[in-house]
Length: 241
Ligand code: ADE
Image 1 (cartoon, rainbow, N blue to C red):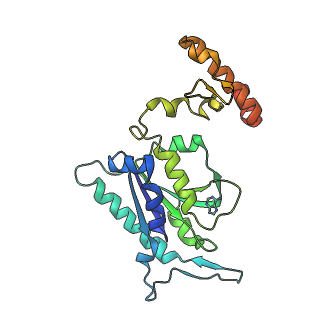
Image 2: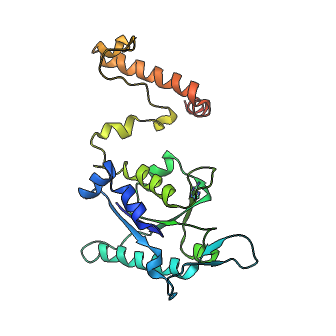
Image 3: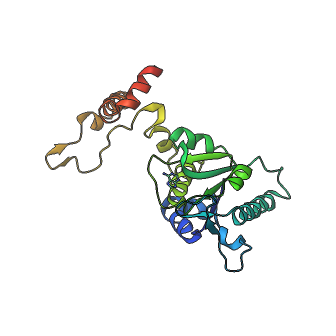
């Protein structure tokens, strides 16, 4: 799966994505990630990408031209990567990361993980000229009801959540299947060595070797934990049964 991130801070994005599990996944070719610097596509001789808003108001706005030309360049990169041996590329999703968007969720991550390519547009300043958004954006997505200084961190959050669902990215295919939010339940508590720490014992059942009993205990724990920590999720789970 290929990720293209249109941004004014490509180093920040690539640094964030090249560490740890995603870095390894990129190295091994399970995913591909490329940050595209919007500033490289401005036709302004001073390399400017923003300007004042019509009608007045505080702050600067990212202009349509550099964003649109950066987008065309990304389209070309995708076409070149698909051609010549592959089938024509599937229709592209262009995600504008904005606090005004639909709230990102595990369900959305699962849906987006089915795409071949994803393009993210990271806004800065007071936003992006509406006209270019109308022409290129297919999805408006937020990571929550708070405002950050730019779209880079939200884009990295989304790429991380989506990429880890791509086959091969996680070592243990199990962990994506049993983790929190699958079936609307949080993951059960887990324990590692030593058996006793700060006078706390690992639950006896986990040492029993009885896998059926362990599974049953884990489900009970998941339900109890969800009820306690996320009553909203618990109600959703109960309603689905
Ligand atoms: N840009 C600024 N804040 C954001 C948020 N909460 N989600 C997505 N993009 C943003």
